[in-house]
Image (tube, rainbow, N blue to C red; front, side, top):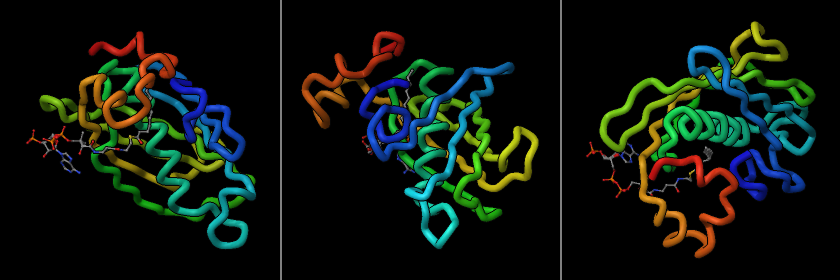
Length: 154
Ligand SMILES: CCCCCCCCCCCC(=O)SCCNC(=O)CCNC(=O)[C@H](O)C(C)(C)COP(=O)(O)OP(=O)(O)OC[C@H]1O[C@@H](n2cnc3c(N)ncnc32)[C@H](O)[C@@H]1OP(=O)(O)O
C-alpha cells in the first residue's frame, strides 16, 4: 500500500484493496478479486475496473522497482477473456524500459491461478514527475499522506 485512501491499494470501502509483492527478476505480483461491486454485464467484471486494477498493478511496479515519482500518462488494455464475478486475477507486471522521464511497463492477468489462462494484458507509459506535482495539483499535504514517499528518489 502506498496511500491508505488510494482506490486501488488503500482501505476505502468499495476500493479494490490490492496488494503487490516483489518477486524474482523484478517481477511484481498483484491479485484482484472481482466482487459483485465490480460488475459490468451481469456476473462479469466491468472493463474499466479491470483497467483500474492494471493501472494500480503497473503503477506499483514502476514505483517499487524504479523508485521514481511518476503518474500514468497512457494505459492500454487488451481484454482477451471474460472475467467472472468471484474470480481472482493473478497479475504479473514488469518494467520494460526507461527513456528519460518516460517509464514503460506492462502486465498480464491470469484467471484464478498463477498459471491460469491470460484474461487481460496491459501496457502503460508512466511519466516521471517532481514531487511537487502531488502538492501543486493534489492535496497540499500530499507528501505526508503518501505512506511510502520517503522511499521514492526525487
Ligand atoms: C513506492 C511507490 C509506489 C507507488 C504506487 C503508485 C500506484 C498508483 C497507480 C495509479 C496511478 C495513477 O492513476 S496516476 C493518475 C492519472 N494520471 C494523471 O493524472 C496524469 C495527468 N497528466 C499529467 O499530469 C501530465 O500530462 C504528465 C505529467 C503525464 C506529462 O506532462 P509534462 O510533465 O508536461 O510532460 P510532457 O512533456 O507532456 O511529457 C513527457 C514525455 O512523455 C510523453 N507523453 C506524455 N503523455 C503521453 C501520452 N499520453 N502518450 C504518449 N506519450 C506521452 C511526451 O510526449 C514527452 O515525451 P518526450 O517529448 O520527452 O519524448
